[in-house]
Amino acid sequence: MTGRINENLWLTAAQCAERMGLTVRALRLYEARGLINPRRTGKNWRLYGLSDIARLHEILALKRMGLSLAHITQLLAGRAIDLDRTLAMQQAALVALRERAEEGLALIRASRQRIAGGEPISIHDLIKIARETDMSDDTADAVAWRRYEQARPRTEVSLDPALYTRYVGAYRFPNGGVMTISMREGGLAAQLTGEDGLEIYPEKEDVFFYRVVPAQLSFAHENGAPAESLILHQNGYEQTARRIGEGLAQEIAAELESRIRGKRPVAGSDALLLSLIAEAARGEYDLSRMTEPLAAATREQAQKIKADLEKAGPLKGHVFKGVSPEGWDVYEVAFENELMEWRFTLADDGRFSGAWIRTLP
Image (cartoon, rainbow, N blue to C red; front, side, top):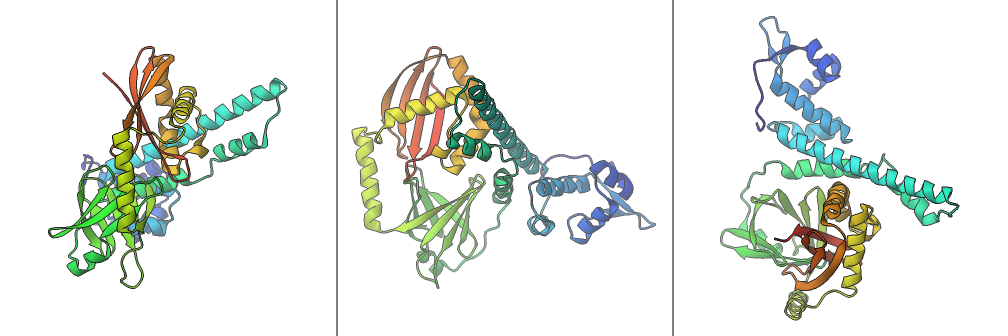
């Protein structure tokens, strides 16, 4: 079990139910589902220790994320308690919810100011407010529970090596990145554009996991034919890459190498960078210009980035430095008080699919 707890405290069923905001009937139900296993006294009374409380905390956290009891049972039954991971998932969900609420309030305040000044409100503005203030949207909860699932411990199984050939090949993500699956002694390796290859291990047929990061790859195929696509399960998201031929994979690699060697940015790169900096400085982003994973990360970090830019001071200038091994446009950006590096990359549809900022020495 991760997270240290004191095992010296025991509660009766009534005390446990009262303190956790549950009913004794609910405790019996969770016990019947195999989710908790309270200690029994000589008179067969149930006593609940802190390990039971920790598991109840997990159950309640997942219920608040919108999971059914059947799904929670499937997720937790027979698995060790991981209180720290549960708290981390709750933290991520609450931060995302708070950031989204702040964005919605900012939109409403700005719209009310325009109305007070006699300015019209466009249909686009109203739709954006409706979308950003719909707090019943369960996207953040769904992401949180997928993070939980992706972070759980994995067990390697024995898989017929003859099956490995169906997975070998190149797969392209919508953001242009290519995942190459290759044979390695005793198994498979996965290499994403611009990154080192990492070994992946079978969890079951068509599903593999990394040991160095909490991420998995699943493959889709028809009747044992070579896999048509793969899904990367990481950070609460699922990104699909479609198989491409070896020729196209080589063309993509050659084009990227040409961009890197020639220091050639994407079309309109300067304008894209400046728009991103302006939105970051305001703390108000047009999230429709971002893929969902980047939009979710932006919601969580928007206020911190805004505070950092306030300390950095007014923008003074920027210089394009080149293209990273992953295909990101890289800029050195000068502010009055700070020198920063900004990077971004685009999806096939032109939306931002990645953005990264760091302060330079």
